[in-house]
Image (cartoon, rainbow, N blue to C red; front, side, top):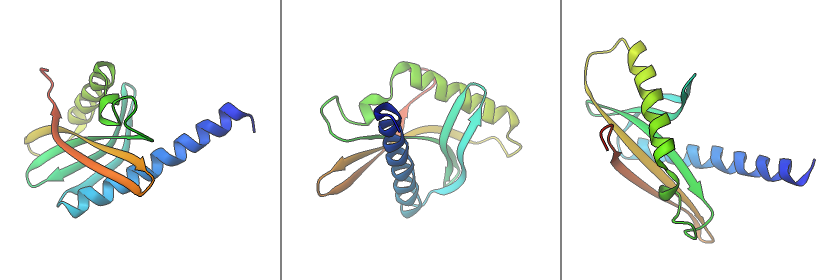
Amino acid sequence: MSWPKALAAVRRARGARGERLAEAELVRQGYRIQQRNARYPVGEIDLVAMEQDTLCFVEVRSASSEAWGGPLASVTDRKRRRLIAAARWFLSRYAGPAREVRFDVVGVTWEPAGPRIELVRSAFTVDG
């Protein structure tokens, strides 16, 4: 396997592990997971969950350090637009009752002592 492919495989594995850790943290905090890796033509939503009566679209980001601002800083305007588009796609097919919707982000930082997990509820809105 070439170096770029090996690095990509390591990153995918780390991302998958980060998503599992994020999911466990959300469940620990009372979220009910509805879907994992919901893929649509416009993008993917890592986790769709309910927290009480709020439907949460959750983006999971991981980073090996805080050098470039950490995992939370990697949710760019472009990424937010793709998440919003995917959420709209989900909602257009969602048969459940109307409810409050929120965008949360879970950051996983891989530190020497172990992963640090940070949940940001209402990390961004459709308007801003």
